[in-house]
Length: 304
View 1: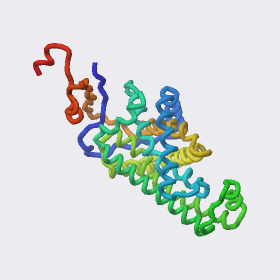
View 2 (view 1 turned 180 degrees about the vertical axis):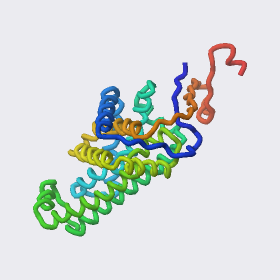
View 3 (view 1 turned 135 degrees about the horizontal axis):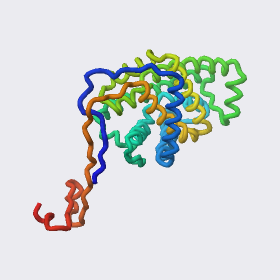
View 4 (view 1 turned 90 degrees about the vertical axis):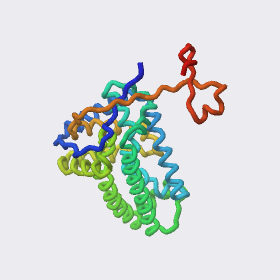
């Protein structure tokens, strides 16, 4: 029997979803359900989670191409800017477990079948741009105070930043500027990606709903934002290794938070049936490279 997966409606939604008011108890419950998802799918989510630290390090090296020490903190503090996009596959795993479907790690990439794939990529690209601009801004703030000085050890860098007037000024200004970047990214994405995964509302609709969520639940969303940012910063130290656990737990929890704050869509859903791959035969080469070919073992195969 072929496996059937429920997907979002292919037609664009005619109206935005309704936003509920929630409390701190809902945050605790969402986190508890996220931890439960993590325990139920540890191998899969850790496999996915380990990808993100590597991507972060490679991105940093590609953009700046020199020693990591001066921007270790901005890189760690800036990870929440792209965290919601990085966790899209985790939302899908939580969605599938919620529906009683198979949750093997390969399904984290099922978003390629989503009608909202383009909006998801566009919003992810926007967050990535914000992240890169933040790193460039942090680099500019550092150079404005220390010039082209590049510390050889983390201890030397820490002494300059923590115990000199220029370093203390950098801490104050850098954190203030970083806070503005974090607020922007949080407003754009607090429920946007789970919403796009669940409904075809488009980039603008997802962003508007995310902002409405914060407007309807300001204190609860502030607490959630601080909690997420704090865990991601802790998970980034040392060398982003903790993100392999923090990102999956927060990703699953964010899906359940979305379920609590956004009213469910009662409209009927179409079904998606994954195509079965036919057997390839040596005699079909090289045609099989361009046209899938399958052969049966019975008489029916010869009558095709």
